[in-house]
Length: 64
Image 1: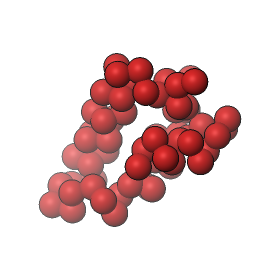
Image 2: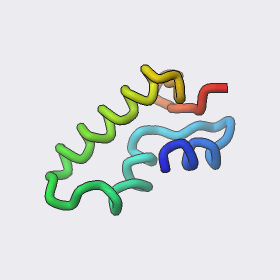
Image 3: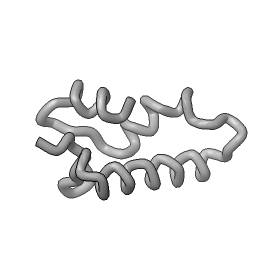
């Protein structure tokens, strides 16, 4: 879902809070808001390490 969201965002990319708002309904509801944000951060970090996405400042982009 994150990759699709970033693909739709195109060259403008997406900030973390926009990605969170997009995903908040599918994140585990038994977690607190803070835990959900931490989970998203971990997912974004792992995707970055795997070379799928890149951050530029506070904005995330698909790796081209």
